Image (cartoon, rainbow, N blue to C red; front, side, top):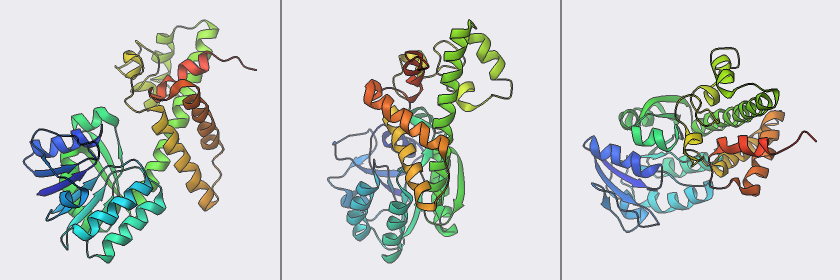
Length: 289
């Protein structure tokens, strides 16, 4: 396919690279002027979208998404498919779908899970919202950039699923960090905690795959001085999105609300630019009162 790719940052660049490796013709644009081997550089988002079969966006916020769609929707050829892989609020995703539909374009909101490592390895999970027809166009590209794509429902459903998933992730990481801090003060070794919990009822991704304790379990950002696979400020962004969505539909999410408060304090207190699992150090430095 001819693919336009807008947003070539830490996630977008390796995703675009994997499409090139698979033989697709990719034209890219990024406001930072990023250049990638094998990707033809465009001078604007509209140029990157023009005459493409598919246009993929990976952007930092809903307001930026809507601004970029204001440029690419008029430029895209009728019948093209727009795939937004950003993590944004549900309403912005639905507004993007509406703009695309009004112009005779197919569209999918398809935020991802798997972080920078998953983007590079082509093992991302895509959570997709949109029509069956649009998902069918996007799916072959999802299979290149990821290991799994789930069609969650109509417009905005992908964003809704991502918000729910990352609220669970934020809550569970805090729980795992708290358990290690408590275990340290009770005189348990961290290895014994991992060996028990990873094979018991407390087993979860935050423990088994992304353990926040250095030197324990599979390699994770904790083993690299908490350089981010998923930055704390991005976790905070997603938690805030979850709480805005919960407010909008009157859903009780007390743990999500508290996790948001804790990550807000962590980011403000020096956690910005660090992996979200570095929460373990913040908790270890605190007392109960």
